[in-house]
Length: 308
Length: 151
Ligand SMILES: Nc1ncnc2c1ncn2[C@@H]1O[C@H](COP(=O)(O)OP(=O)(O)O)[C@@H](O)[C@H]1O
Ligand SMILES: [Zn+2]
Image (cartoon, rainbow over all chains, first blue to last red; front, side):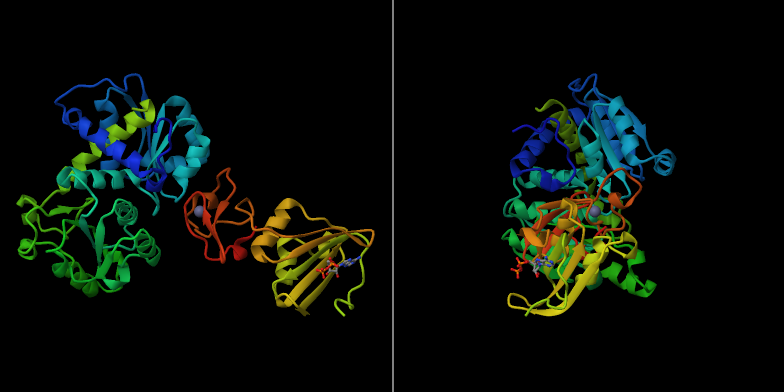
């Protein structure tokens, strides 16, 4: 098995074995990611970082990852990205960037943009988010964070909380968790609950799911609580939003009956859904999770460019 | 007893066993209108042993291209096509659901990259046969009604 030259568009493009390989390699990257060790593994290689839509964590961590491995980066981001969309086709931008680099990472507001780009690019394309579609490297770093803590995914109980309908991260994460043998609870207000097709796919993988709107009741049984942001725009009335935001929120009180080893994750940015006082408990894992984006993306860049 | 009302054609195509009520849509996806200058006969809601009822379309002086056959398959998967040459059935076959179609139907996701000004044809992959379901190769969206997006 080799990942060399492979496009990473959707988490389903990766076999379980390939996911394990990436996560194992990411662990070996941690020291380099923290700057404790140097590396020139990707010296002479260039990453084209094409962000047609704003991003903070994904873009910065990819660019850091490439540079930590001794590679170079060329970037399109911010205003330049959005005006490029108006000026020429994505296909043309990709063909140009493909000629200037060895690998492309991209984010684009349209679903399917990364898959299409992969058909125009000779070099591999990594999807950094396409509209409401896929964001596979987020899923990989989420899995990495859980596996580093517990040493496994199989048998964990993961509780996903918040906007499970529109939040794209929870869709691919729950499918990946199901493939890897974790059971799940989906906790959300009814109007933004997990879409049926995801629930069905998860069940078809032989995994038990519990759908509820009672967060407190799920805390004691959870190994991981994965929080997401609930957006105000999803609600017609401000009052309704406030009520909902309040009951899908983690503060210290609710954690009384939590397992000692339980971790709280969040893809960030957060608004109010995790009280800042929780940051100082042993459960908080979201800043480490954000850092984990670097070693995981280093591993991916190296595996896709070098094959090992 | 059947189709007595319709006169035989010398050369052309007969599309039979069309899902009842779909005949006009068949003309539409095949782009047949007054302007195409072809003579057309239609029978709708006629009795058929196999399907209960069916529609039937005969078009003079036209043979279907492979992409037309694919369109028909998506619209009405039980249709049979007979090519008529010199009043005889020269070839007869049942349409077959293609595993994937390119440039035949638009992706229903308006935010899909294939619905933008990009040099790419929409491509749908079949994920089940009964009912026939398709998924967009690019954005992954499962299509709720391909028949209404045929190009
Ligand atoms: N010369 C012709 N002109 C018009 N229609 C014809 C001609 N020959 C056959 N057809 C029609 O083409 C279809 C296919 O022919 P056939 O194989 O005999 O039909 P069936 O589906 O009943 O087995 C039938 O609907 C038949 O009426
Ligand atoms: Zn699509």
